[in-house]
Image (cartoon, rainbow, N blue to C red; front, side, top):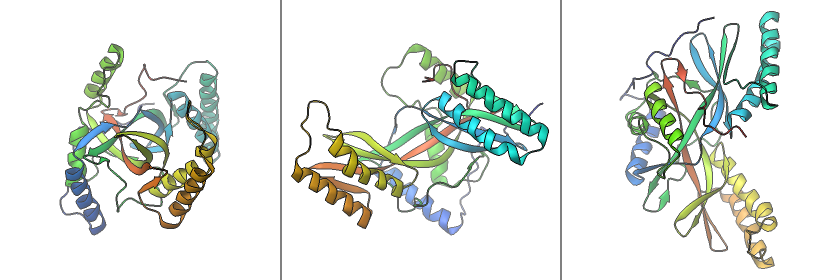
Length: 307
């Protein structure tokens, strides 16, 4: 079965007269762009599952660390959704789920498949963070504490404000890594920019990062600022007492008490930046983007690790 393409994949539809809530978000984004002018890749790519139905693409899941993990998530989605379809389509969805599971056991890998009028793809999603003089951009006032909306659409032609349009232009030809990468990966990245010339912004995630002498490293994450705070509280209460870094002594009773108090402060007060035992932590906003082309969102690349 043939499927529709993705019209407008190489266009940015800028709207200046935004509704009030969107206008406030756009204004804060513009202020943050001035305060945090740098833009750098936020770790390795992650992977998700997308579905095309009736010409429209939507995200089914995000956050998988490898294409294989995304296929496992897609297999679970197909099994769960099969009951809502007619028997022939349901049977095909269950067969696809089995085939995806066989791929995890060493069988043929599939990053794209179809069942009746539905098309599914394992998509590649890259994260970026803005940086300024004081480090990475923290969560914004306008970021939802409820987390991202379910099943966001991948719609490059959807109207966006000037700030989102400027960010998409920034990301169009940008590679996520500053350091040298293997030649094969460099060629794949260049080919992806050519084959998938558009960019769509997806809901951000929020990384808990620790400042170690100006070098920021992630210690947890969440789908909303509150989920990231919960991850940091768990880090203070559970992980820090249990997992001392190699070569370092475990925390003293006094340090454990201070970590516990910091976790209590997080639970009581919220916030975006915290100190405990001389260590500095911040809830950092991570931009997510997926490349898009005439055939839809970019799939996993051949060199992507499948562990």
